Image 1: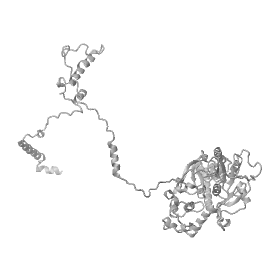
Image 2: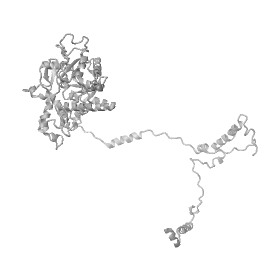
Image 3: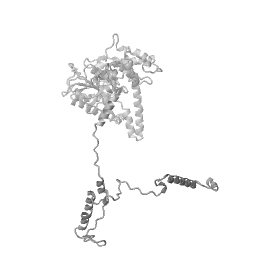
Length: 539
């Protein structure tokens, strides 16, 4: 499904969008992308052949969403297998067969979860399933078109010719077909990611002037697409260098001749067969057969070069007459078996319901509106610095930073406490002084220590002794209060007298010499030992 890594590569060219922006317009939908998602919900029943219409209701949910926003939907379905895609289809068929066998093994072993995962991997959308969706759409007046081959080319034809204003898909190949506007990853609310062809050069950043759709298509072909596998070691990141380095190359052949030099891969070998396969993939993107619903005839997506016809591009689809192409486009023929499965005719009276919300593209007098939609992502213009001189000075920046630091407001200073304040806060209260009214020692005061009364004893002690003493000491009276030794972390503890006489201050030179001799004598006595002690030390 598409080019691996192409949408992340085009991230700069995308923008969020909603289908309501295209209210009043026409939207072409890749119906198989909806069918695959709807089939995942009932993959186990589809794989076991059980009847279900979950995928039909899933598609109708999104159709109702588009109709609610005033958008005319056109569902486009895949048709016959394309010869250029035969190898890819064979590989996918083998993968489905392998997972179908694994699902049966898990189911027999009772591993329902693993079996369901394998059923989802092996689900295949059949023409019969597409017919059920087509009939449900017809009953609601919604147009459907079955492409003669690939739905991607048919969607691109409708968009490039003004029949559809927007394409909704999950396949990134639509970018390479030249669709003007593509909405990817649309959710249940109608929001998604929009890529406009006018915004594609933004993906190259500063080299946007070198962008071309032809070079982007070649890059994607070389990195691997549905029509051709990539060269060994060449992915989208490596091949994208051609967008800039090969911008002035004449044609595809000239680029392929110098491909090892462009990609800086000297050991890369590009065979003549691979060059022919690249040209076939390029022609498939350009000249794939599609159906024109207005003219009701089979046409190539791009007009053939002079002197060329469909016979020169058999890998882009085998030519068929217009009548057979019309029956395929209407969904009356099973593209897998060629059997007739329906007889719908848009010209028959009553073929379209009376409550249809829009005119049908199958009407003989239908004329597309071809509205002009404003581009949502305009190229970003950057001012040029050519010829301009700017002086950058680190010293000026440092000076501005220093000036800003100086202008900062200094922190407020804490108030300082005086010595008297500290003494009042942390000094131990002095014992209350005896007065004439106080009894002598050994006699308790009146009411002291008694538990009855109103507590006058304790209250009198505070008021008569502690508070007057503090007031006296703070006012400077009776200086003995300030001379008391205070033990606190705010005051240094007075040093005690030195107990070691050797540490006492030296008063004279004679005393200094005497202390020196005593110290030497003490050292000799400390380290003196007898010769008889040597064996003990050795042990």
